[in-house]
Length: 139
Image 1 (cartoon, rainbow, N blue to C red):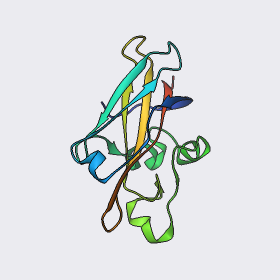
Image 2 (image 1 turned 30 degrees about the vertical axis):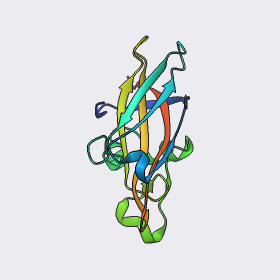
Image 3 (image 1 turned 90 degrees about the vertical axis):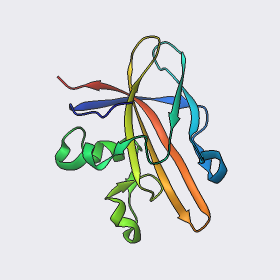
Image 4 (image 1 turned 120 degrees about the horizontal axis):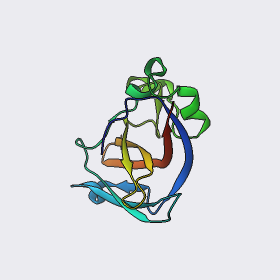
């Protein structure tokens, strides 16, 4: 799990076994698998609340890593509703949105995982993985 600092191009979306978790499912961490687009290997990802990930804003701010329009075009995030704009302009399900880079354990293809995590309403905490996308560093 690492931050991405170089410009990237978003590629194909990988299949994710389970992308929504709530309350007791995420007490310590949430674990799921994604299937590599290149070699087909199932790779495990574990998301620990308040420890995993980096703010998505770091990626699209001033188009540093990727543009907000590319994130929207690939349906990685959506525009945040007006009442939740304090979480940033682009979020996953109007939740604080984070990302991390990872790679296939077999062929080392690079992937980005984007997820939203937070309290959706009193007593309902959600972790929703928007998806896992293969990416290439820009030249």
